[in-house]
Structure formats: C-alpha cells, structure tokens
Image 1 (cartoon, rainbow, N blue to C red):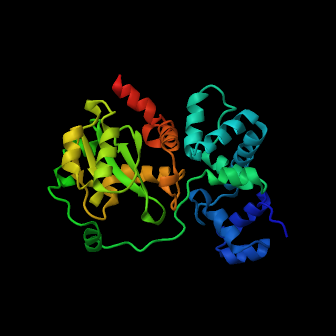
Image 2: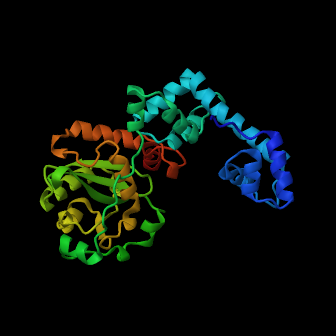
Length: 331
C-alpha cells in the first residue's frame, strides 16, 4: 500500500482527539495510520500534544512540500545549475561548499540557488548507473569501521622520545587565537602497508595546504622535503610548525635552522591539538584514500590535488578559498 501524506481533515481529527485526551495509539487506529506517523506529525515544528493546531500544521506541511518540490525541479530543469553542481562535485567540493559558493558567484540570479540537502537528494535519487556511481564517489566518506584507540602510554612507546622538544604549551597565544598568519600544522598520511607516505602542511589562518611528496619516512628525508617546501613560502608567513610526536620529526632543530620555523610538539594521542591538519587530512583522503601507495603517485599528481584543495571554498573562510585569503594577506 502506497503512503500518502496526511490530509487537512486528518489533521483536524488529530487536533480534536488530542483535545479529548486520546493517545497517539487511539488516534492512529482511528485514522488507519501508524503510531509513528501521528507522533511525528504532532512533534513537527517543535510542537507537542498541548499546542498542536491543525491549521498551522497543514500550512507548515504545504510550505515544506513546495520547498521540496522546488529543490527537485530546479536542479532537474536548470541545466546550467546541474552542470555547475556536477563540475564542483568532481573537484571534490562538498554539497554545502557548492551551495554557498554558487550563491556568491551568482548573487542576482535566483535560478542559481540550491541547498545542500537538495544536492544530496539529487545524488541519491539518480538512477543506478555510471553517473550516480561517479558523483557519489566524489562525496567525502567517513571510515567504515571504528578502530581501537591506543592509550597515551602505548602511543608514547610506539613513537619514542624526541630530544629537545618544545611542547605545544610553550607555543605563543597568538597561534591558538589565529590572529597572526604564518603558523602551520604538519603531519604524514601513511600509505599502503605503511611503506610509503605523503606529507601535509596546513596554515592555520588561511587553511592553505602544501602537499609534500616523500621518497621514504626517515627523519632526514622528511626534514629535507618539508624544509624545501617551507622555504618557498615568504619569510613572514612561516613562523611556526606544530607537529605530533612522530619520529620523522626528530630532526626538528635542523629544520628550524633551515627555515626559521620554530617547531612545537602536540601531546601524544591528542589530534585535536592539530585540528586544522586533521580536518585537512580528511579532505586529502578524498583523493588519496587509505591503502594508496604513494610511491606510485607522481609529484605532478600530488601538486594537482594541492591546487584543487587550495581552490576549494571553505566554510570556515566564509566560502572563500585558501588561495584568495592567502593572496590577500600577501598583498
């Protein structure tokens, strides 16, 4: 039996029976509906059984239905919008990033308006086929399995001790406040069978990302590769680097000497202390999922992904791109 929406008359019966003190079960049996349908109807819009009114509920449902119909109609009937959405999905933009950026790029064109929910709806109602598979693969994925979290003691033993570390607690307050640009966070994305890796550097204020190809994970290789990339940044935009206590940063003193960037180390098993980097790593994994063999990824491909990330509008930047914010600061 196909479901059909509640009618205005049914809503009036719900309102009348609630006033008589009837339960949701009694109302559901009288209407021939499920209890959950009645319960959801009464609680919609923050209502409860004491303030529910049929006329108000019916107007709200009609507005919602018109809005839902409009979302669907616009993306299906506006080829220009559909091409825009599909193109940005292929660049790995999220539906929210697309919705916000399209409004900024077409401020006076109301036909170029869409909500993130409408984009998701469009993707999931596409008929099964190559296009649906391609576009859904562009969405950001959460991990499929939960992993047992290592204890702080296990983390410390696994990483070993780095000499002459400066703790994150000694980092200037301006870094945490993001008042002054030029403070970076760094990390490694580990590849297939832990045999390869890709370095990432992220500037905390602008979210500018630098991807660092690595031949191996030794401390010397990581230090030299990170320093080479860091020295391409203007001196006033390379003030500090916050890193975890991975052994690959054992050469931090030489790195500081080469780049003039002071290195601070987060506490073991405290990824939230490098939250900008952790979030960016999630974006990078859209292009290089877990299990990627980075030894088979060319430098050109790595830098292409870097370009896509920095040209992507970010919610935290009011949907400007890292490139745009970084260039404003340079000027």
